[in-house]
Amino acid sequence: MTVFLLRRLLQAAGVVLVMSLLVFLGVYAIGDPIEILISPEADQIERERAIKALGLDLPLWQQYLVFLGNALRGDLGRSFVFNEPALRLILDRMPATLELAIGATLAALIIGLPLGLYAGLRPSSPVSKGILAGSILGFSLPTFWVGLMLIMVFAVQLGWLPSTGRGETVTILGMRWSFLTRDGLAHMLMPALNLSLFKISLVIRLTRAGVRETMLMDYVKFARAKGLSPARITFIHVFKNILIPVVTVVGLEFGGTIAFSVVTESVFAWPGMGKLIIDSINVLDRPVMVAYLMIIVLMFITINLLVDITYSLLDPRVRLEGKS
Amino acid sequence: MSTTTAGAPPAAVPPAARVETPFRRFVSEFAASRLALFGLVLFCIIVLVAVLAPWIAPQNPYDLAQLDIMDGRLEPGSVGGSGITYWLGTDDQGRDMLSGIMYGLRISLTVGAGSAILACLVGASLGMLAAYAGGRTDSLIMRLVDLQLSFPAILAALMILAFLGKGILNVVIALVVVEWAYYARTVRGSALVERRREYIEAAQCLALPTHRIIFRHLLPNCLPPLIVVGTMQVARAIALEATLSFLGLGVPITEPSLGLLIANGYEYMLSGKYWISFYPGIALLVTIVSINLVGDQLRDVLNPRLKK
Image 1 (cartoon, each protein chain N blue to C red):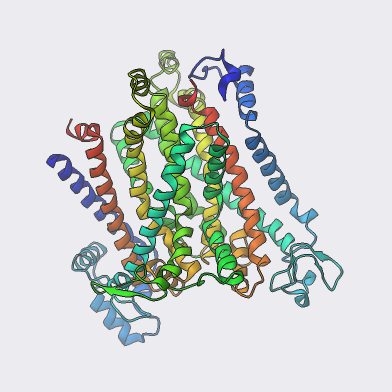
Image 2: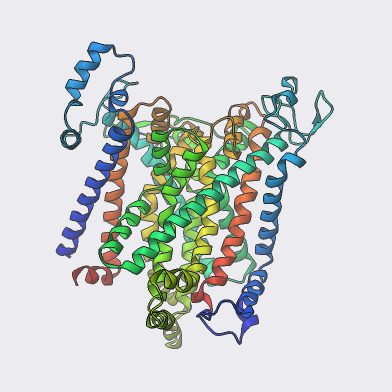
C-alpha cells in the first residue's frame, strides 16, 4: 500500500509539473507576456520597470523556474481589475462554488441511485423505461438553457424563488456560507438542481448499466442458487460491485461539477469561482485566469488521487497490479 | 431485445463484414426500438431543415434589408409590418426566430459534425498507433489521453478559447482538442483485442504490408465502438459549442449558433419575453435528444456483452 501511494503521489507531482508547464507556455508563449501581465494603461517607463521586475528579460526556461518558484510560494500574480492577489480573489469565492457543487453531488446521489437501481432490476417495466427516457433527457438538456427556463418559470412567472445571487450568508471559519440560512437555501435550490441535472442522469445510467451487467454474472446466479434472499443479493452482491464505478465517477465528476459550475454560476449570477473566471476572461484579466487554472489543476489531481486510493481500497486488484 | 435472433452467433461479428447478413441483423436489431427509429427520422429531418434553410426559411435573418426594427420583440404568431407571420416571434432586431433557428442549426451542426470528424481522425490514428506500436509510444499516448480526460472538457475548451479568441474555426479546434482522447481510448481498446485474433495473425503470415493490415483488417473491426462513441460525441460537441457560445466565448455574433441565440434572449427573459431564448433551446434539445436516442440504441446493438 505504501509503495502504491508513493508511486501515485510521484505521478501526481509529475502531472502538476507538466500542467504548470502547459499553463506557463499558454500564457507566456502563445500570447505576448508583456501584454498579458502588464496593464495596458502603463506608459513606457512603467513598462520597462515592470519587464525588469517580472523578469521578462530572462531566457524562457529561467522565467519558468521563477514562475514555478512564485507559484510554490502561493504568488500567482495580481488581478488587473481588483488589484488584489489573484489567489486570494479565487479562494474568497471558493466556498460559494464548493457548496453549490456539494449540494449538486448530494442531490445526484439521493435521486440517482434509487432510480438507477430500480431501472436495472426491472429493465422491462414501464417505470424503468420512463426513468431511462428521463435520464436521456437529462443528458441531452443543455444545462444553461434549463437554468434559464427554471428562472423563467420559478422566478419570473411564479415568483417562488429568487432568480440570482447568493442571498443571506453566515460566516463560519472566516468563510461565508449560504446553506445555513433560509434565504440562502432558497437562492441555492435552483442552481444546485440545475448543476446536478447531468449528474443525476449519469448516476442513473451507471447504476442501471452496472446492475444489468452484474445480474448476468455467475456469482449472482450462484448466490441465487444458494437460496439467498433477493434483498441480500441486490444490496450485498450486486450493489457493492456496482458501487466501484459509481464512486469513481461521482468522485471524478466532483471536479467536473466544480468546472461546470462556470455555466450555472453565469446563469444564476452565483458569485463563485466560475463566475469570476468568465468575467476575467471577458476583460482579459490574465493573472486571475492563470491562478484559476493552476488551482483547478491542483484540485483535479488531488481528486484523482483520492479516487484512486478509494478505488484501491475497494478493489484489491488495482493495488496488486501496481506492485507487479 | 435479442430474442428475435435466437440462432445468431453469440458475440463476435464475423470478420467478413461484407456479407449481407450481419448488416441486416444490425438493421433489424436497431429498428427493434421504435424510439431509436423515431430519433433517426427526427435527426434526418433536422439535417434536411438545416441544409435547405436558405430555400425554406421565411426570411434571410442576416440580410439586413429584410429586417424591420419596428418588428422587434414581437410575440409568436404576430404579423409583421411587411405581412409575414412570425410563428415563433422575433428577437430585438426584428429577426424572425424561426428563420434564425434554421440558420443557427446550420452552424451548430457544422461545428458539431466537423469537430467530431476531425477529432475522430486524430484520435483514431493515435489510438491505432498506440495499440500497434505498443511500448513507449503506447504509454506516452495513453498518458496524454489520461491527462486530457481527467480535465473537464468545458474548462479545457474555455481556456483554449480564452487564449485563441472567438471564431468558428477556434471553436472547432477547441472541441477537437477536448474530444480526440475519447476516440483514441476507444480505438486502442478494441484494437488491442482485435490484433490478437487469428485473422490478423493470418494477415501477418501472408506478409501483407503493415498499413494494409491496419487499414483493411484491423480498422474495420474496430469500427463498431468507434461509431457509438462518434455518435455520442457529435451530440456532446453540439451541446458544448452551444454552452461556449452562451458564455460569449464561442462563435462570433455574425454567425450565431443556437447557443448564441439563446444567450441573446437572456436579458429579455426577465421581462417575460421568453420566446427569444425558449425556441432556440427547444431546437437544440430536439437535435441533441435525437442524436442521443440513435447513439443509445447503437450502443445496445453493438455491445456484445449484453447479448446473452
